[in-house]
Image 1 (spheres, rainbow, N blue to C red):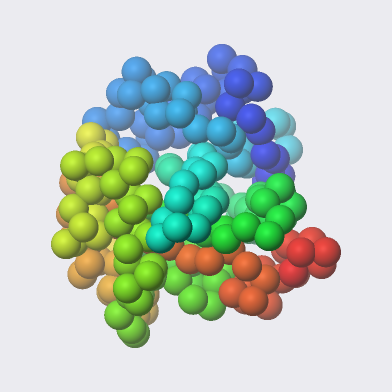
Image 2: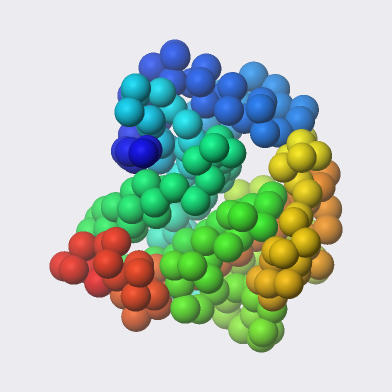
Length: 235
Protein backbone atom coordinates (compact mmCIF):
# COMPACT_ATOMS: atom_id res chain seq x y z
CA UNK A 1 0.00 0.00 0.00
CA UNK A 2 1.27 3.46 -0.87
CA UNK A 3 1.65 6.33 1.56
CA UNK A 4 1.37 9.96 0.53
CA UNK A 5 3.27 13.02 1.65
CA UNK A 6 3.40 16.71 0.77
CA UNK A 7 6.86 18.14 0.12
CA UNK A 8 8.20 21.55 -0.80
CA UNK A 9 10.12 21.42 -4.07
CA UNK A 10 13.47 22.62 -2.60
CA UNK A 11 13.40 19.71 -0.13
CA UNK A 12 13.45 17.08 -2.89
CA UNK A 13 16.68 15.14 -3.15
CA UNK A 14 18.52 14.48 -6.40
CA UNK A 15 17.33 10.87 -6.20
CA UNK A 16 13.72 12.02 -5.72
CA UNK A 17 13.94 14.10 -8.88
CA UNK A 18 15.54 11.31 -10.88
CA UNK A 19 12.89 8.84 -9.75
CA UNK A 20 10.08 11.24 -10.62
CA UNK A 21 11.62 11.79 -14.04
CA UNK A 22 11.85 8.03 -14.53
CA UNK A 23 8.12 7.69 -13.85
CA UNK A 24 7.44 10.43 -16.40
CA UNK A 25 9.58 8.71 -19.04
CA UNK A 26 7.79 5.40 -18.52
CA UNK A 27 4.40 6.99 -19.18
CA UNK A 28 5.08 9.93 -21.50
CA UNK A 29 6.91 10.24 -24.81
CA UNK A 30 9.26 13.12 -25.67
CA UNK A 31 10.02 14.01 -22.04
CA UNK A 32 13.22 16.02 -21.64
CA UNK A 33 15.25 16.21 -18.43
CA UNK A 34 15.87 19.95 -18.70
CA UNK A 35 12.19 20.70 -19.30
CA UNK A 36 11.19 18.44 -16.43
CA UNK A 37 13.54 20.26 -14.04
CA UNK A 38 12.43 23.68 -15.26
CA UNK A 39 8.76 22.82 -14.82
CA UNK A 40 9.40 21.32 -11.38
CA UNK A 41 11.38 24.38 -10.33
CA UNK A 42 8.37 26.60 -11.02
CA UNK A 43 6.17 24.66 -8.61
CA UNK A 44 5.70 25.23 -4.88
CA UNK A 45 5.23 21.63 -3.86
CA UNK A 46 4.82 17.99 -4.76
CA UNK A 47 2.43 15.30 -3.62
CA UNK A 48 4.54 12.14 -3.42
CA UNK A 49 3.29 8.57 -3.23
CA UNK A 50 5.77 6.08 -1.77
CA UNK A 51 5.65 2.31 -1.39
CA UNK A 52 6.57 0.51 1.88
CA UNK A 53 10.23 0.48 0.79
CA UNK A 54 10.16 4.27 0.47
CA UNK A 55 10.36 4.32 -3.33
CA UNK A 56 8.32 6.94 -5.20
CA UNK A 57 5.58 5.34 -7.29
CA UNK A 58 3.66 8.47 -8.27
CA UNK A 59 3.41 12.21 -7.82
CA UNK A 60 1.52 15.39 -8.58
CA UNK A 61 2.99 18.89 -8.69
CA UNK A 62 1.24 22.04 -7.54
CA UNK A 63 1.64 25.82 -7.50
CA UNK A 64 -0.18 28.56 -5.61
CA UNK A 65 -1.35 31.45 -7.80
CA UNK A 66 -2.36 34.84 -6.38
CA UNK A 67 -4.22 37.10 -8.78
CA UNK A 68 -7.06 39.60 -9.17
CA UNK A 69 -10.13 38.92 -11.29
CA UNK A 70 -13.06 41.29 -11.70
CA UNK A 71 -11.78 43.42 -8.87
CA UNK A 72 -11.47 40.54 -6.38
CA UNK A 73 -8.45 38.77 -4.95
CA UNK A 74 -8.30 35.13 -6.08
CA UNK A 75 -6.09 32.33 -4.80
CA UNK A 76 -5.80 29.27 -7.02
CA UNK A 77 -4.27 25.87 -6.40
CA UNK A 78 -2.73 24.97 -9.74
CA UNK A 79 -2.13 21.29 -10.46
CA UNK A 80 0.37 20.26 -13.08
CA UNK A 81 1.47 16.74 -13.91
CA UNK A 82 -0.18 13.89 -12.00
CA UNK A 83 1.21 10.46 -12.78
CA UNK A 84 1.10 7.14 -10.92
CA UNK A 85 2.72 3.87 -11.90
CA UNK A 86 0.12 1.60 -13.49
CA UNK A 87 0.41 -1.03 -10.73
CA UNK A 88 -0.93 1.54 -8.28
CA UNK A 89 -3.74 3.19 -10.26
CA UNK A 90 -6.68 3.97 -8.01
CA UNK A 91 -4.57 4.04 -4.85
CA UNK A 92 -6.46 5.63 -1.93
CA UNK A 93 -3.22 7.33 -0.89
CA UNK A 94 -3.65 9.82 -3.74
CA UNK A 95 -7.10 10.81 -2.51
CA UNK A 96 -6.21 11.05 1.17
CA UNK A 97 -3.09 13.11 0.50
CA UNK A 98 -5.00 15.38 -1.89
CA UNK A 99 -7.46 15.88 0.96
CA UNK A 100 -4.56 16.97 3.18
CA UNK A 101 -3.48 19.44 0.50
CA UNK A 102 -6.99 20.90 0.32
CA UNK A 103 -7.04 21.25 4.10
CA UNK A 104 -3.72 23.11 4.16
CA UNK A 105 -4.81 25.30 1.25
CA UNK A 106 -8.02 26.36 3.00
CA UNK A 107 -6.25 26.80 6.33
CA UNK A 108 -3.67 29.12 4.77
CA UNK A 109 -6.25 31.19 2.85
CA UNK A 110 -9.03 32.00 5.31
CA UNK A 111 -11.82 34.18 3.95
CA UNK A 112 -10.43 34.21 0.41
CA UNK A 113 -12.04 33.04 -2.82
CA UNK A 114 -10.20 29.80 -3.57
CA UNK A 115 -10.20 27.63 -6.68
CA UNK A 116 -8.59 24.52 -8.10
CA UNK A 117 -7.07 25.28 -11.50
CA UNK A 118 -6.37 21.93 -13.11
CA UNK A 119 -4.85 21.22 -16.50
CA UNK A 120 -4.91 17.67 -17.77
CA UNK A 121 -3.60 15.59 -20.65
CA UNK A 122 -5.73 12.57 -19.80
CA UNK A 123 -9.23 11.61 -18.73
CA UNK A 124 -8.01 9.86 -15.57
CA UNK A 125 -6.91 13.14 -14.03
CA UNK A 126 -10.04 14.92 -15.29
CA UNK A 127 -12.14 12.37 -13.39
CA UNK A 128 -10.78 13.73 -10.11
CA UNK A 129 -13.09 16.72 -10.60
CA UNK A 130 -16.42 14.85 -10.41
CA UNK A 131 -14.94 12.52 -7.82
CA UNK A 132 -14.18 15.31 -5.35
CA UNK A 133 -16.45 18.23 -6.28
CA UNK A 134 -20.11 18.91 -7.04
CA UNK A 135 -19.58 21.82 -9.42
CA UNK A 136 -16.67 22.04 -11.84
CA UNK A 137 -16.07 23.28 -15.37
CA UNK A 138 -16.04 22.50 -18.20
CA UNK A 139 -18.43 19.56 -17.95
CA UNK A 140 -20.70 17.50 -20.18
CA UNK A 141 -24.10 18.43 -18.78
CA UNK A 142 -24.06 22.24 -18.76
CA UNK A 143 -22.34 25.25 -20.23
CA UNK A 144 -19.56 26.91 -18.28
CA UNK A 145 -20.96 30.08 -16.63
CA UNK A 146 -19.50 33.38 -17.80
CA UNK A 147 -17.71 34.06 -14.50
CA UNK A 148 -16.00 30.67 -14.41
CA UNK A 149 -15.17 30.77 -18.14
CA UNK A 150 -13.59 34.18 -17.69
CA UNK A 151 -11.60 32.99 -14.69
CA UNK A 152 -10.34 29.93 -16.57
CA UNK A 153 -9.25 32.21 -19.42
CA UNK A 154 -7.61 34.61 -16.97
CA UNK A 155 -5.63 31.95 -15.11
CA UNK A 156 -4.63 30.04 -18.24
CA UNK A 157 -3.49 33.20 -20.04
CA UNK A 158 -1.58 34.33 -16.94
CA UNK A 159 0.26 30.99 -16.75
CA UNK A 160 0.64 30.12 -20.44
CA UNK A 161 0.14 33.29 -22.46
CA UNK A 162 -0.44 32.75 -26.17
CA UNK A 163 -0.13 28.99 -25.77
CA UNK A 164 -3.64 29.01 -24.34
CA UNK A 165 -6.49 28.96 -26.88
CA UNK A 166 -9.59 30.42 -25.15
CA UNK A 167 -11.97 29.39 -27.94
CA UNK A 168 -11.10 25.75 -27.28
CA UNK A 169 -10.19 26.03 -23.60
CA UNK A 170 -7.00 24.13 -24.35
CA UNK A 171 -3.31 24.75 -23.67
CA UNK A 172 -0.98 23.83 -26.51
CA UNK A 173 2.23 24.16 -24.51
CA UNK A 174 3.02 20.51 -23.99
CA UNK A 175 6.01 19.02 -25.77
CA UNK A 176 5.42 15.57 -24.27
CA UNK A 177 2.39 13.29 -24.47
CA UNK A 178 1.05 10.02 -23.12
CA UNK A 179 2.55 6.91 -24.69
CA UNK A 180 0.20 4.86 -26.81
CA UNK A 181 -0.63 2.19 -24.25
CA UNK A 182 -1.53 4.83 -21.67
CA UNK A 183 -3.37 7.11 -24.11
CA UNK A 184 -5.79 4.36 -25.13
CA UNK A 185 -9.27 4.51 -23.63
CA UNK A 186 -10.88 1.18 -22.66
CA UNK A 187 -14.24 0.54 -24.31
CA UNK A 188 -15.98 0.41 -20.94
CA UNK A 189 -14.75 3.90 -20.08
CA UNK A 190 -16.28 5.32 -23.28
CA UNK A 191 -19.71 4.66 -21.81
CA UNK A 192 -19.03 7.23 -19.08
CA UNK A 193 -20.25 10.75 -19.83
CA UNK A 194 -17.29 12.50 -18.21
CA UNK A 195 -14.78 10.43 -20.17
CA UNK A 196 -16.54 10.99 -23.51
CA UNK A 197 -16.73 14.70 -22.79
CA UNK A 198 -13.02 14.96 -22.08
CA UNK A 199 -12.09 13.09 -25.26
CA UNK A 200 -14.46 15.19 -27.38
CA UNK A 201 -13.42 18.49 -25.81
CA UNK A 202 -9.68 17.78 -25.97
CA UNK A 203 -8.96 15.39 -28.85
CA UNK A 204 -5.46 16.84 -29.01
CA UNK A 205 -4.58 15.20 -25.68
CA UNK A 206 -2.96 12.49 -27.78
CA UNK A 207 -0.36 15.12 -28.81
CA UNK A 208 0.03 16.64 -25.34
CA UNK A 209 -2.66 19.34 -25.39
CA UNK A 210 -4.21 20.01 -21.99
CA UNK A 211 -7.76 20.92 -21.02
CA UNK A 212 -8.00 23.86 -18.60
CA UNK A 213 -10.46 23.17 -15.77
CA UNK A 214 -11.72 24.97 -12.69
CA UNK A 215 -13.75 24.42 -9.54
CA UNK A 216 -14.32 26.30 -6.31
CA UNK A 217 -12.48 24.93 -3.30
CA UNK A 218 -15.14 25.45 -0.67
CA UNK A 219 -16.82 23.06 1.79
CA UNK A 220 -20.18 23.68 0.10
CA UNK A 221 -18.71 22.30 -3.11
CA UNK A 222 -17.20 19.18 -1.54
CA UNK A 223 -18.70 15.77 -2.16
CA UNK A 224 -19.28 13.55 0.86
CA UNK A 225 -16.05 11.61 0.36
CA UNK A 226 -14.13 14.90 0.12
CA UNK A 227 -15.56 16.01 3.46
CA UNK A 228 -14.27 12.78 4.95
CA UNK A 229 -10.77 13.44 3.58
CA UNK A 230 -10.52 17.09 4.58
CA UNK A 231 -10.34 18.05 8.25
CA UNK A 232 -13.81 18.55 9.80
CA UNK A 233 -12.53 21.94 10.94
CA UNK A 234 -12.69 23.03 7.32
CA UNK A 235 -15.39 20.80 5.81
